[in-house]
Image (cartoon, rainbow, N blue to C red; front, side, top):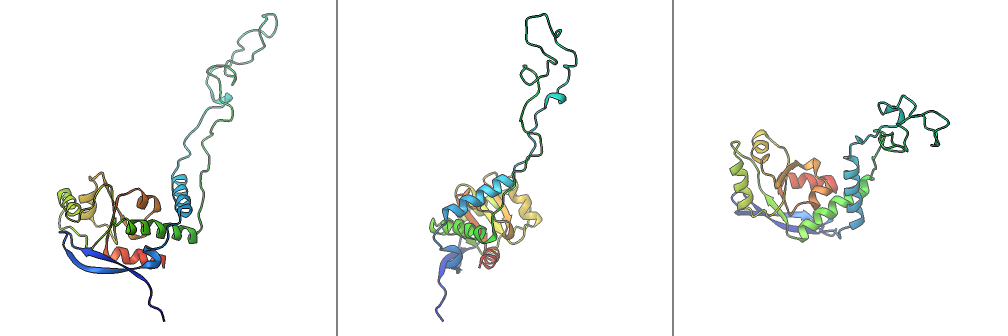
Amino acid sequence: MAEKKTVSVKVLNMAGEEVSTKKLSAEVFAIEPHNQAMFNAVQVEQSNSRQATAKTKVRHEVSGGGKKPWRQKGTGRARAGSSRSPIWVGGGTVFGPVGNQNYKISQNKKEHALAVKSALSLKVSEKALVLVDNIAFEDKKTKNFVAMLDAIKAEGKVLVVVSEIDENLFASSRNVGYAKVVTSDNVSVFDLLNVDTLVASESAIKEVEEALK
């Protein structure tokens, strides 16, 4: 049986020291990126996050306008029954959003998996994936989280993927505006493409790999 192809990535500790090497499946982390699948995945995520809150008032919802502006005949002007007619300034809106728009679209599981693999492969090819043996903090201090990112040389916007977000990690990272922490089962294509560096714990990257095989 032919040996499955793998990609080797260095594993660092939180101090930025290399401690081992991790072999990742080439089927997940070294495929030819599929641009259309990634585009579709981002479009689905952004569309499904839209809130249908836009609402305009139609003619009967605009206050006032109960009195006929002028008599029906004899003025030389066009007849008018209400100052809240859509053709009047201050009148109702025709064909505007009514507050129950549905922006939901979907993507099948196979294409979504391809999109995630493509985004991960891009990060590996750009050498923007940093693996850390274990991401855990003993206390709730932002400076410790920032110190870890500096030590492992995580540049620009950063996505940190872990198996579980405990209280210390959440509190330490929440005030770092350029970093986002997610669990391995909540990695989105948009997040992967929207950051400069992907940081993941060994356990989290294994969970992501197993979910996509």
